[in-house]
Image 1 (cartoon, helix red, strand yellow):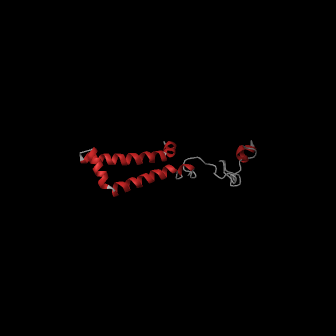
Image 2 (cartoon, rainbow, N blue to C red):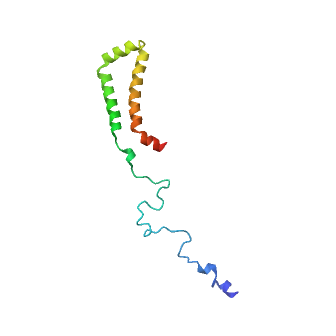
Length: 121
């Protein structure tokens, strides 16, 4: 009975107060792990991948956008005459030009970004 009162040979006397009871991540153990113990958890920033590189489809979408904008701004008389011949109403003609311009550029842009869209969806 005296051993229990004095604290000898009990579970409480076996606990080392200098050693914490929770797991400790040592720098020596994780020195070879380049990503760290919590890699892949929320809050970590992944390295830039191949999905963010500039591709040929990006160049095609950019080129199409610039060339169509140049044609529509520099050659207004022939474009206006052709569109007004097809669509007599001016509001419909403007809508048709905008629809054709943004649909064609938008298709190339979506095709260029398809991998990123599929990954984030």
